[in-house]
Length: 181
Figure 1 (cartoon, rainbow, N blue to C red):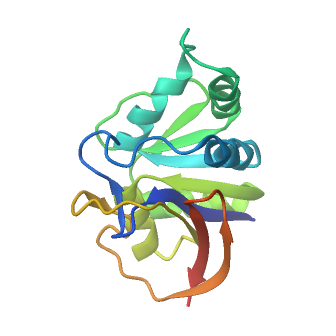
Figure 2: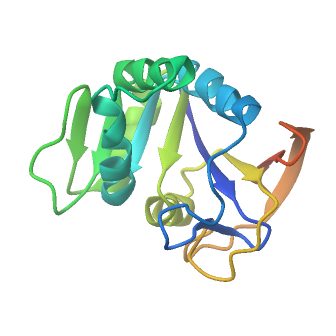
């Protein structure tokens, strides 16, 4: 049986998106980016909301300015089975499957069928998955920024949580892992 994990960079005031395309928080350090590479390489798959999937499609094509770490991330992302929850899309890209209709049933079936860790990406989708009781762990990569507005990590959901681990990823980023209480 699969385990659904929501893992995202989050500001000190709880936002994952600064509404300015990530310009305020900026890119993660090299050490933190390497952590994301290792994480994605260990996943059994990923479930995306439409907006986050469209952002991540950037990794579908190589870019000449990329360094080795960016290429490594892109290769891992392309290999990863992806499921995209959307009512607006009629098709998705390579190695991706569209989920429409009864989202809860389809995700529960996916979770039962796929062994390993499945990431959930996108704050609105994560809010839905939280309300449905589908998220097994919440991984917050707490970064030293105060955004003041944007999309919150816990979009329309306020689950009771229990901290099970914490670790420093780099000199500025703390990895907090919570499970539903």
